[in-house]
Length: 322
Image (cartoon, rainbow, N blue to C red; front, top):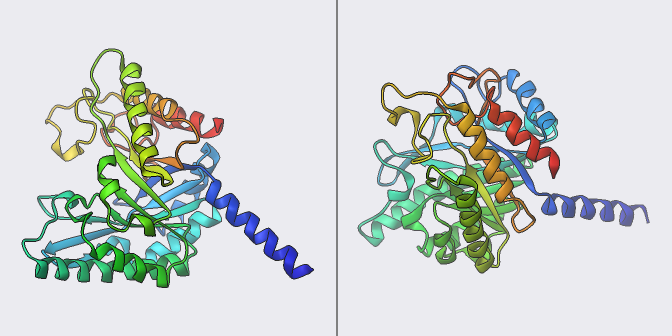
């Protein structure tokens, strides 16, 4: 009887975890505070107080040749494990969401000219993912993303073997994050995933911004319904730069020299998106981004982070509503 009661409690907790709507941030390591620095504990506790329930850690994998990959030195397995423990201690769920970095390019352009090239690439990438899958299992990470924005790889059959290999090590939730929602239907291992997601940085125009957002959100909802799969938004964000509506995905190192800040615009945009995308038709939304340094951001900052800017309050008000 005691065993059955305990089992029932576990099943209820698991069910609650699965049904929980994700609310939180992609938490990146800043240059001066490591993810496993004790200062980051208070930082994540603050996120919990703001109403967040989830953080995504983004271990960067550096690809230096067509099939040569290494985990970025700032995101070591040991460091990530400690950071995940800290997040759990703060009462947050964790998504492990690896991202490939390529000098002068991006993950969506990864391609191979031959079957031999694809075999080499997937062998290298699977090696990286199995290492992260072991970490996810050992640290009881709630969700593992097996790829992010790997546009030209998505219809490759090798994904099925990769997902099976990961499943043998990690028994939590598996997901894939596409750059475009239209890419998800052609992902070759869709049936092996618990959910799918996108990164979302749509261009907006000056004028009736909320009307545009409502229309775009409706399109996302319609496309998500076609997938017949639990769906979430892995990244949504905009820099606090004047004029960022036209290209909200642009990184600060690509800004013009005399770029001006506009933290009010960032707050307005994120407030609008969280309002228009609200509802139980998706599993949740993660903001891009937040740093391990609690003092990051601020009113003179041009970066994506919402820290110490009006966007923090705007986002928190939505987290606490739902």
